[in-house]
Picture 1 (cartoon, helix red, strand yellow):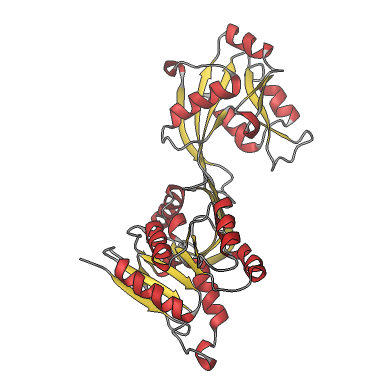
Picture 2 (cartoon, helix red, strand yellow; picture 1 turned 180 degrees about the vertical axis):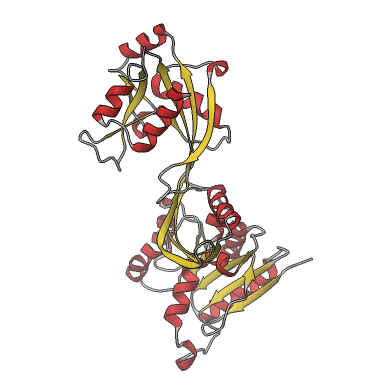
Amino acid sequence: MRGEVITVYPGQQPPGSWDACVLVEGSASRQAEVIVLLERGWTGDGRLVVFAAGPPGRTGDDVAGLAGWYDLAFGIADVLMRWWPDEEAGSVRGSLAAWNDRQRVVHGVPPDAPHSRYLLEYADSHGLPAAVTLPGMVSLALGKIGSGSRRTSGEREVPLPVWQAESFQRWYSAQVSAGNTLLGARQVWTFSAGSRQPVLLYWALQVRVHVRAEDRVKSNEVVISRPDISVMALYRRGTTIDDTAVVLVREFRSPAVTPDGFVHELPGGSGDSGDALGQAITETEEETGLAIDVRRIRAYGSRQLAATVSAHHAHLFSAELTDDELARLRTTQATPHGAGDTERTWTEVTTFAEIRRNRLVDWATLGMITEALLD
């Protein structure tokens, strides 16, 4: 069964649920053409909502409240479609900054327009899909949407790329299980990697949630998420827990607030394999040069990190080292490891007492080390 396409103009209320929604920008005549192409091309079983500023001739009182309508549509649309009119290149350059969301934006430009070369080069350099025909632009937009995903009420305000992220669904499932209700959301930013098919890595949403246990609405916080990490606590037991040797890695991370500008953490990292244990083994070898046999590793499951701001988790593993392995790591402390310029790590061998005394690690890392050593 083929779904439906509903167009929403300023002053009109959008439906209470949809599977996908797009914002169509451009001249009114071009908008009308795009809407027809969307109606023909939408093959999903659900509902596609099209936000359009208006049909030809819509003026005066008809556009009252356009600013608020546009702000809402721009923030929640799964895809932002912009057909650039035949205007001067300088005007286009001044407007492009707001149209660079790699997960949502699709550009279209007449091939003979004076600014077409500039816009197409801009799109290519920023990994943004662009077309030189209206059907091509619509095809790119529908390709981004796929079959969409049903969202109702406040869920509609979560754009599709974030909605479909595993990290968002885990956060949202936890809220639903607690009896809480998502009343609304606003995408603050996203960060993607990859040139042609960008993968969503980080997202931030300002959310409005009804908290059932307290019967109140919480709306003044932002939820941030990034890919989960897998970490390995490597240690050699001493006579006491304070004497126990622990292996850390030192790495420059931009958010670090430390005297040396580096973070001191357990070996580990993130990936998209879905294999937390395999990721921990790979990252440990990459960052320390030490390959750990899987039969020596103990798993502790995952927990949330920095729960007041971030929804992402750490998967914790540990392995006790031999004296020879510990000695080898001591000799390589001045040798950098990692993956080139994007990652450079230095091995540090210290003790649990020194970690606590010198405040080398953040509270989350200290907790993971303690969990492994007390087990």
